[in-house]
Length: 491
Ligand SMILES: [Zn+2]
Image (cartoon, rainbow, N blue to C red; front, side):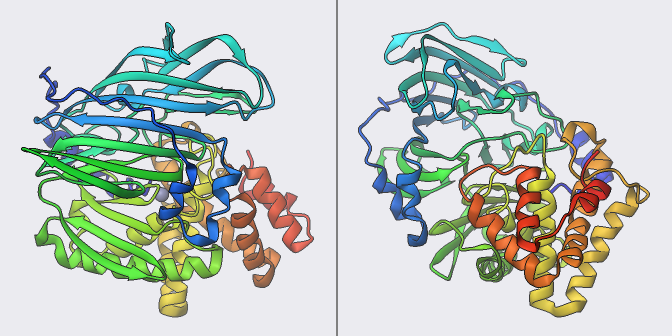
């Protein structure tokens, strides 16, 4: 998430105080969810993937397959859904429980779940972390490589304000933003099932690659945008039913507005689309230009963008921009190019398609792995496009962020929860990116370029850690980087 929040504290406060949180009211939703489960041949997901990555579908054939039906009520803030997940135990231990995150319960809304079944047998789930964690006990423990199906139904009330968690889930100003709006499987890692209540400063998710087949039943005038590709649309009366296929992706994002117009651009086999009200056309076209140039640069430097499509939407989010797999949200108020934040925000969010989505990381425990790298990649973009002057201008911005916390040598590799809001911005978005300049100086430019390519390609579709990044760097330069990491990264 680009959260240049420290610069915008005053503005944010103004926005926060001008938003009124209205309690969602119960209202019947018009159409019951359809049955979700259907047999799926994973090769269907090739259509949304760059051909260079088609082999990954076989490699990830044991990744979770979500089949979700959303029904968006006519009021646009009451949502019902039904979800079926084919889950394989890819861990080297037997699992007695499966953990799902219910993010609406900590993002200002409310999600309830019912009819939870494992292999079609009803189970009684447990709740934790302010009802944001749904724990499904397994009557029969699931051994490594064994598969199960977990299904459930859910209801969500979406807040009609953007004053919590940057408005990533909100119905506000005629935009319905549905980030992480389904029961989402947590990551099982060296900590076991890895879940916590996220700090207000950072991103909230940490997820493995998964496949998604999603249908959305919604009012017909809502222009819908989602992760993946649209594969079918049916219209009946004043309703539409749209089908999406996305994967491998770390999340499924859905957003809609009756006011969206579509602006399109092609680059290197990728279709870029910007959805925004028509009065923001100039910002949309500028953004598509920045996006096209950044994709060309990052394709060259880090490896090819994974999908056939990348969508942008303008939303009233309180962050400048937010990354989702194959979709980027840009906040409305920077859509005027003369305001000056559009280019760096678009490029930062495009960089997240490599650092966050293609190479994953625990965004709560090691946020620098995606945020500092997205900032550094943005500096590389400015250098490629505008030469040394462009690079120096962006480097000054990075230094300015660090200076905002007094150039304190606070480690860049800490969890979000260990930083204050201002430190999170100054260290993770400022000092963390400056670390990569130091790393390049230490390794030499050729070694550094090789390292960045290797880091992305060797960890693509998986989850990286600080130790993995350091090992990749050390193997590319054949040098010992312990001291540099000690000074900049570790506690
Ligand atoms: Zn970011």
